[in-house]
Amino acid sequence: MGIVNVTPDSFSDGGQFFSPSAAVARALRMRAEGADIIDIGGESTRPQGAVPVDSAEELRRVIPVITALADAIPDAVLSVDTVKADVASSAMEAGAHVVNDVSAFRLDPRMGEICASNGAGVVLMHSRGSVSEMGTYTHASYDDVVDEVLEELRERVSAAISAGVAEECIAVDPGIGFAKRGEHSLRLLAALGELAAWGRPVVVGASRKRFVGEIAGVSEAGDRVYGTIGANVAALDRGARIFRVHDVAANRQALDVAWAVAQHAAQGEPSS
Image (cartoon, rainbow, N blue to C red; front, side, top):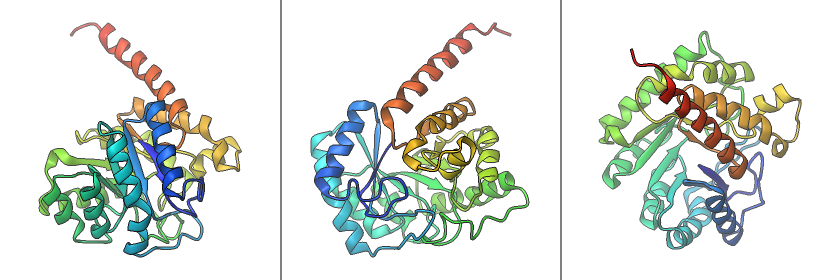
């Protein structure tokens, strides 16, 4: 899943792809590098100073990009990264197939109904707090981060199903770095098999995150590609199947090789 931030203030690439033409070019390059899904977002949840935008501005940012990509790469899966039901609805009309909601339908209760009526795929990500807070440590207090994240995410899955979203349309994301300190993100990645055991596609968004920089001693987000690859290969081994990344080519190559090794190992196991 290649990340296209049509924002002036995203933590890693804010402003680089703010114009529709730059965003479309970025998405086409990601597609050529091996992205199966293109995730287009128009509102930042950056760790410091994220400023919510209204629906009109968010639509102004993302709809031209989605429309252009739906025409240019009709075989690609397009995802809209939004917490607003009206943005999700318009994005699906423009050609989006998936709604990636970092609030897992917490912030707009209409989201479930909108996604259900459109037959959309949904990614439900664990987070706490508002758009301005979820990328910070404001709500990063846990007695047992794995148990609490799984319980809160399970509640969001139940809410989506109650709203009419089909079981087979739901993917889950533990929300690496969202209302979580570095040790929380590491603990969740280590225990990812517990989430994968639900039998739903597991999405991981570790790309360029703070915990990668903390471990590797890399302050610039754009320089964390190697650490991101390490996190994603570990997540693949623990059951993740969708990887939300900024650096598609490097991650695709690493994950393809890791997957080939895993498949070879599975084929070589003796039968019981």
